[in-house]
Image 1: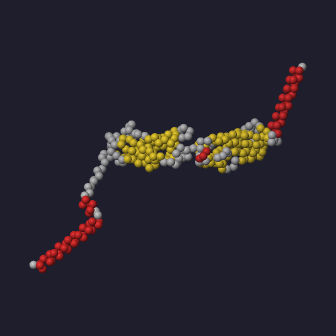
Image 2: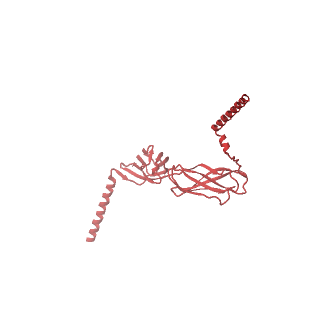
Length: 305
């Protein structure tokens, strides 16, 4: 008998607690948590840092007929949202759709971070007076970007002769917002370069807006014919997601059978003196004085005899 009485009391207590919890859930600020009647789809959630990005949000009714629908999209800082993030519909029948294209700016300081946003929908089911709510989480990834530019490229010597070594030099500039990692520079071993003669350069980390010099050497085939050739510079680097990238830039150079001979003139002391204007002027004055002196002497000699 005692066991039956204890069991009855436990059942009654459980029923009271379930009733209390249900009533509390139904009266919490006038909102009831319903099963999902809305489907939320998003695209463009991977943002490029330091740029404006397009975010597309679609909210569709996949459940019951809704009234007084109020939808709010929350974007976490430091992201900046341009445009309306709040939509209201007096009725929202099954199959109805809300589609919005929004502009979101991601600052460079957010590069490499994952942020959490949310879409909250409040509505009433048809035939009910209590508000229901749905919350959908939306994740955003902010990616940094790299833009490598190769500039001020020179070839030395140019022109060059068969069998000689050339050096291709230049600078790398990262115009992006994150560093390029494990950067190295090489050139394709195309004709007339000797296969295996290319000596690449490891540059390492190339930070944004910080020029990094490079120099790659190679040997020209001794059997190369005279003419104009083109070599291809390759720049390899890795981004923040450990993905490899490559940039290629062509550079031209000439090959001649022999280098033109340059005539060298030996300068003597006399040549240096004659190139001095003051010396030439003084020399002219002395010559004139000597001539005058000679003429005066010739005139005096007849008088003396």
